[in-house]
Image 1 (cartoon, rainbow, N blue to C red):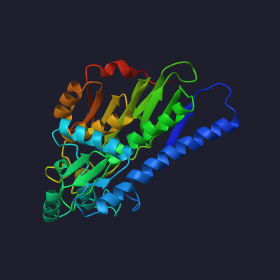
Image 2: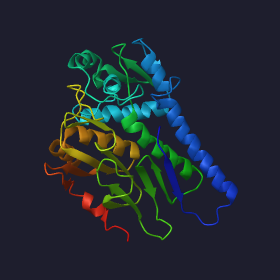
Image 3: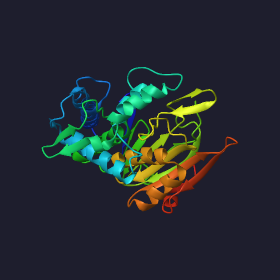
Image 4: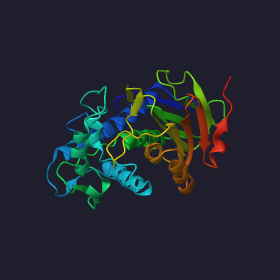
Length: 314
């Protein structure tokens, strides 16, 4: 997945061999997600589907089907703002596996990609299987697979009797039970400033119990050209980097795969439409941080999000 992970477990008297077993279970769970859904590994299940030019049914695992199901539902709820078929655009813009760009791609190249982009070209069939309407369709699950990895790591812990834990993969989290002090887990949300190390400057602290958290932003994966910032969040309708003032979106939901996809969807929708969608989506709460013209940050959030807010730990 190209990132780090951290697992914290609270359990009395765990023998070393049990700890080693937990480590192995988590590592295997994350490796399986990578083996299925990596766009960097040509042998992954997703890469093989992308490389296949047939429009016939392509058998996939239950796990890949589960992530695709969440992706298609999120696409529908966001009116197409979230779309996992933007793979060709991701590569064209230099945010994928084929190297970086320092300026936007030519408009003609973007226009050439658009006919093969759109979740309506992707179908989830019983079996399970996937089918594409156009041979060029390329699926990129980067916006949901990491969250799914968090969920699978959490399941691996629970299958071994662990009921108090915090799992974090590349900034996406899932928490259950109480921490080692018997209190609710606290997770920091970074101030969306480019160049800051994770955790160096916190915008907010959230309390998580039996919930997941995912954050999407424009301050880590982007480039600037002629004084304008172009982030990795792309508009599947236009093919261009989303030009809104949102700097960061953090979403709390029961599962991390839902939180992960919804955070990206809200980033693509922008502050007003994004907040409206979060308010309408049961079981989803969001904090949206907008960059103002003077370089400051303005926060908006769903009505129920405040229940998660906590003061920083001193």
